[in-house]
Image (cartoon, rainbow, N blue to C red; front, side, top):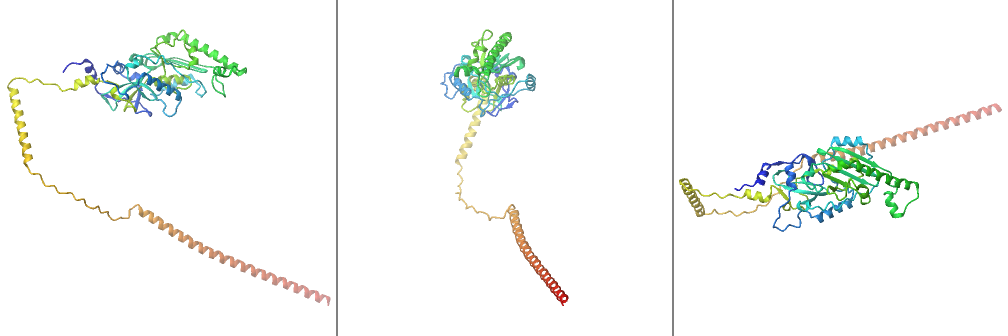
Length: 459
């Protein structure tokens, strides 16, 4: 067998176990930190694919135009609660950092971050296969020897393996809010800054500058305060960008979320919008710019997905594989053994001929034997066994009988009680009648006695 150095390198890592991570609800995958992925695996993911002579399928990996349409559709959906993007989540250290920063987590009506188009149309995406999963787009590779899984996906925001574990910066800006973080080795926060000003109109919503462009400048005191807030926020952002010029210069990738009206404030002398390191954050619904949003966005971008099964519409044949299919096919091909001369080869040939002849005789003897007569199958009518009273029915019957008995007793008791009540009422009335007759008799006697006494006195 010929020697293939790439295949030998792959065979060193032939068996890979599914790592332990956060199980995603939106797709059948496990999210782990990209910092825990092996370097050789990231190098295989971003390795340019060799040209193929086969015609690609229409259900293959996504093209640059399709990716742009999917991303624009995700941006239009905004904070869609149906399929939110998920990542590895925040660590205890990051949560403590957010609590110490004391960000205001209350909701407010701010502008949505519409990101950049020029930075997305890079030539590296033409080399890497892209798939749609977890509400975003990922570079994908088929892992042929992954136990319990099918492949790996890394966010399309990265363009090389070196960027995945390098220094990153996250810049978020919207109306009245600005947040920035510098992430160093292992994704630790090295620098962070949050600025906010009174810019958004309280009840009506929207930035004051946008309202002035649509309906003209308002002359109220609140409108003037919001205009001053926009100017002060722009000064704060420019000051931070100047102070962080050295930190941004050492970053390998800069992830930005900024609406078009705010780009002139964010970009300038210290950072240009055409810088190849500037990338959009390919996730919707990041939220209001603050410390938590910066860390959550970085966690989403730096979450590698180990797929247990591919999302719908993905053709694994059009994705890059590890080990390569061509080398694996060559490696698994049967090798031809050259016949060697000598007595041993002659004896092996004679033994093979004898075995073949014995097998032929056995087959001929089996064919000469008369086949046994097959007994025709006669279907027997299925007899249904008599229905037996189930044990479950017995308690129901007993309960019904007890209920009827109780009702009968209640009816008998009611009749007895009614008769007793009528008898007591009759006796009470008779007693009242006797008392009334006695009272009348006493009254008549008293009248007679008084009349007799009056007669004797007059005589």
